[in-house]
Structures are given as C-alpha cells and as structure tokens.
Length: 561
Image (cartoon, rainbow, N blue to C red; front, side, top):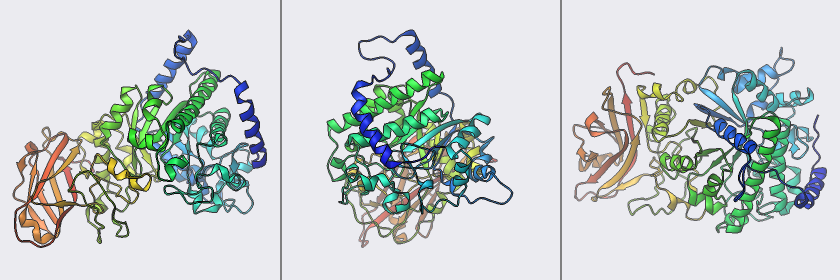
C-alpha cells in the first residue's frame, strides 16, 4: 500500500530535477528531420485509431462519490461506492468515464507516493467515507473505477485538475506541500487579481516536475486508457497573468515543454504495455484566451501533443463550430463540455464593460425569468446536444452531472434519436456568474457568441438589435411545431417592439407578462444559424427596453419526451 510523505516527495523532486538532463526522454514519434521507424509509425497509427473511437457521451466524475458513508451489509464498501454514480451507467450511451481523484493541486484520493493522500492526514475530515475503507483493503476509488470499466467494456481516463483551487476556502483539501513551499504558489502571500492564492505557478520548475510525476505515477500504476489535463479547473497558471498581465512566449514554451514531456512519457509507457495512453485536454474555447493564460493551444494540436480536445465550462466565447474546426484541422476529435445549468439571475453581479458592440449593456436582473427553469429540462439538454452535433462535434462531454439514472444519458448521445425529439434552444445555459473577465483582463471582450440570458440582457433601441440564434433541427422535414419566445422588459412596451426571423416578420404573437410568444413558420427558420432582429418604433416612451432572453421550443408529431 502506498504511503504519502511530502518531505520525501520534495527531496525526490530536487533529485529528479538535477538528474533530468542526464536521462534521455523517450521519443514522441518523430522529431523534425528524423523519419519515424516502422515501429513508431505503427504506434502512432494505433494511438490515432484509439483517439477516434466512438464516444457518444464522456462523463466526468469529480470523485465525490467516494465520500459516501459505508452502509450495513456492504462489508467492502464497493457496491455502495459504485451505486453512487457508476453502476446505473451500464447500458446507457456513456462510453467513457473521466475519473478525477483530486480537488486541489497536490492532494489526491488515490494511492500515491508523489502527491499527498488527504485520507491519510490526521484530522482531514474524510476518514468516515468509503474511500478510507477501500484504502484499508489495498485498493482505492481509481482502481475500482478502472476495474469496473474493464469489466463493462467502458473506456476510462484519469482526470487531473491542473490547478484546482478549492483548497483556498477549504483547508481540509490543502496539501501540506503548499505550506512547506510558498514559492510554489502564484500568490506567495498576496491575493492575485485573478484566481486564488493557493494556485500553483507553472513558471516554477518544481511545480512542473510535480505535474509530470503525478501523471507518470498514475500511468505506471493504473491501467487507464488516457489522462485528461483539465486546465479549466482553474484557468490561472502563471504569475504574469494572475496579476493582470499576459503570459509570455517563454511561459507558453515552458508549459508546452511540459506537455511534450508528458506525451513522451505516456507514449513510452504505452509502447511497453502494447496499448497507447491518450492525452485529452479541457481548455477555454478561444486560442486567444488560451494564449493569454499561457496555453499555446494551436501549437499543442499542430505538434500532436494531445489526442482529444474538450472546450467549454464556466463560459463559452465562440460557437461550437470554432472548436470543431480547430480540432479537426489537426485531426483531433472535439467534445463540447456541457456543464450543468446554473441559475442565471444574480443581482449582486457588478457592472462590467463589454465591447461586442454599442448595444451591449451589463444589467443586473432582479427577478427570475421563467426560461431559467426550463434550462434544466430534458428538452434543453436535447437542444444543447443537437446543437453541438450540428456543429460537427464528435460526441458530448458532461461535467458535474451526478445522476447516473438521468434520462439524458440514454438520449443525448444518439444523433438519430435527437433529430425527431422535442427540444428547447436558448443562447446561453449557464448564466454569467463566472464570466471570462473573472479570469483575465478585458476577458469579456473575447465574446464572439452573445451570452444572452436574464443576467445579461441586451438593450432594444430604435436601431435594429440583431441576435444570431443557431439551432440543430431541420424544420423543413417533419414540420415540427416551433414556438419562439422573447422576454422583453418592461412589458408595457411590447406593442412598440417588432421581431423578424431571417428577414421575415413574425406576426400574430401573444403577450403575457414580459413574454412575447410567436408561432414560428417552418419556412422562416432553418437548421444552423438563424437571425432574429428586434426593433422599437420611435415614440415618447420613457426609460429603456431590454431583451432578457430568447427561447425556441420545437415539438415534433408524437414527440419523444
């Protein structure tokens, strides 16, 4: 059984760093100017084939199922552990499980000699759950998950949150290493402008070495199919960016070198065991945003350093087509991250500056819009998935979805099923509680897809307000019923507001409270991008008028619920 010793780990890091130059790294496949051998070519092709296997749904499990309490009659704790989020997945459309065992950098829940297993720390507060029982039996949650997936023919990745900072507010998660080595931290005693003080600085060579050893240890000791490097949990990596600047070329090169070393290591282990270990990465959906925080995303893809691209989380800056085109340009499959919807209304959000165009204004909504509740419906999940598939996505990635019996897991991974299933489309599902400006200077200026929702309404002026509204349905075939709803505030101004869809006026609408509701003729809407325009007739009305939300409900004859 592994034991944790942070002092030993620190000594090892120094020794490893000193010896690094003397150890030749395994070949990645081929270096510039050097042709690949037949063996290398075969392995690279094997890795590509594994990367492009069919994945209808990837389910990311954050590892919280291990905190379940042991129940009577389950002496090992295994059954109760698996029942939390896993057993019911058999027969669903989930083909791959990404399993996370760390909620803060340096603290792990699996057996480790390099990191710190917080279950072994006295007073950590997590000893009463199933996880400690598994450790006492010589196993752990990651090993159990690997064995379950092997038995049930599921793919399994270990997910590493590259700079998770849940330990900023929860000291029970904080690795002892962070107190012993404050020089590893971005804050160094100061609170950075972006991110938390417990974030580690990837500009520090020892930090990068730790990352490498964490991943190497898992790949060596566990039969995983791949590793996910989750840079969206949380997207602050270097001091330069954390304190309000932009990551330098040198910093991007340091991180790229780390990813290259990890690729070389996983390939070496993969060759030895006769099966590749894939590398997936979850990042913001913008090359520019990634560059600002230190990620040379396009370079990673071009150089073949990652096998799978996952984009999206707290915010989305571009239509899904942006990420799909980027990944596919370099032969990498793309999986949009559909995070759980959260309430979109928060009157405490401060006013912020946007520069999409002069129509945009940040307005703190003070009451809930009914469309908010619909964001959690099955119809909305189907709409999100259909939209992602229409953009060319290779599958669906779900984050923080903890209900293994949820109907969506038997529906949203099937493109054919979605074609004639009822749906709800809205522009933005998660609200804007964590906008990009929370993570970089002028981050909101990178929005290329309107985050329209009750927290972020758009002002309707006499000049036309244009909203691009993509959908994943072909309305010309089965001729489903399509209803478009526009939430306009104040309701007293509805008579002065006119709406068009793709240049065709919408007429015969009804008004209830803030809601303007129109039956949408199939000839007026289309699969892909649609353009809604709203304008106000000139008049003496006092005050401003805002579009708070748009919802498009599509129902087919004998619609699937």
